[in-house]
Image (cartoon, rainbow, N blue to C red; front, side, top):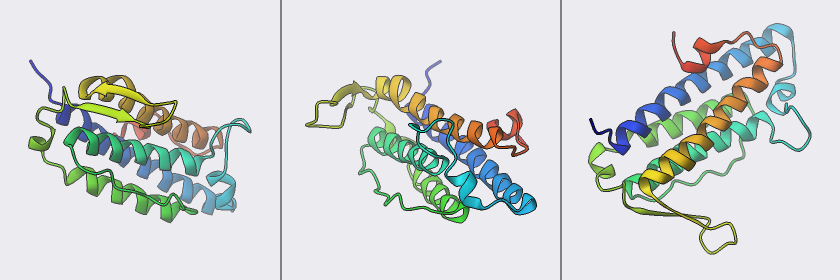
Length: 169
């Protein structure tokens, strides 16, 4: 059985972005209920040198858009990364999900061998085939930032669990 790049990416991004939206909604409700300033959660981090929650969500969305676009052979949509509230992050996730949903399976055909270049012209430039890009770079990066977002909220007392992370209702 062969699994297409589309099948291995778009539904995965959609599921996990949906779960990310749900855990952020629970975080907002938690902040309201406990009378916690939203910024306390949005700027939370486990250690001073790591990105805060807001940036983790932005990067997860960046990877969902970027990986999907590159594999489909279309331009990567830009984002200003100026989200500052739970509502802003929800809007970002919705824009990301809409973009990913707009891509058709046919656009991914031949993407397995398409050359993907990240950070071109810099010392960090890397070259991948489409398959390697998705499986060894794009998905691991995406899951890292979704998982970190979940862990930051869980660590701060938001009542979420594995079913929430997985997007299972």
